[in-house]
Each structure stands twice: as structure tokens, then as C-alpha cells.
Image (cartoon, rainbow, N blue to C red; front, side):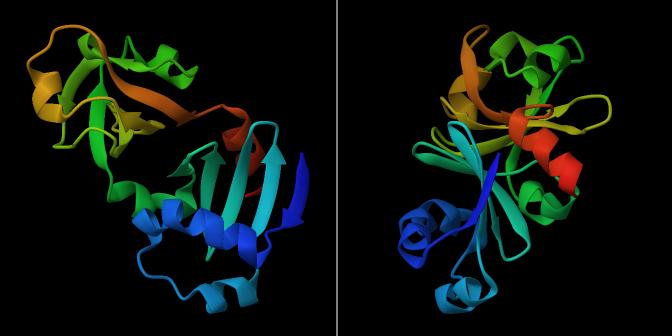
Length: 161
């Protein structure tokens, strides 16, 4: 793991992906406080304004940590049965047969995956189809798992927070 500060040009490039969650942030104010980056191979964890994000390739999602609760609560949710929990918590995509209920979302939206019994967050992913389309299906991938409990980013954040 490598820790460093994000340059202003790097932050400007990342900002469009984070703006969905942060709204209209004052870039100068955020950069003055500093933006830390923890590099973990092909993904990185970015700390912005007290929130943590997992960033990889062309995507960025809020990290599954207690400090991000307000961000996570704003996301549409998908609840999975307890049989799907170990698979989703290991990084598997969310399949339609495991979904018990879901909020309204569109293709490409960032979605929070929860267990149906305790409603605990298991993963954050990208919707591969709308909730309307998913409700008509009996099989298939619905959510691409981008960040989950017990992945490298989650373990690193649990260690430091």
C-alpha cells in the first residue's frame, strides 16, 4: 500500500466521478485541506472532505465504512437473501435469483447491496439494468460488484479507522 497526496490536476480529473456523491464541492477548499490517496494495486482509496471513496478505472464509489453512512443511505438499495451473502461478500456480482427486493434505479446507477435480514451493507456496485427491467426477469446479472466487505480497500480502511 502506498499513501500520497492527490495533486490538483489529479483531483480535477477525478472530480466528475465524485461529484455525483459530493454535489458542488468547493474544489479550492477541499484541496487546501488535502486529498489523500492510498494505492492498492488496480484500485485506490481516496479521502475527500471526511469521506472515503474506492476508485478504479472509470468508476468511483463510496467506501463501505461507518463515516460514509450518509452517502451510502442516499443510494438505491438491493436486498439479497442470506444464501447470496457469502458470494456477494466475496466479490460476486448480484444475480436476479438472489434479490429479494429493490429500490428504483436506472442502468448505470451506483447501487448499495444489503442483506435482507439485518439490512447491513455488503457491497457497492453498478446497476447493469434498471430495477423495472430486473423485476421482470427470473435470472441474470443485475449489479456488477465494484467494492465489497473484506476486499483490499475495506480491510485497509478497517485497519486505519
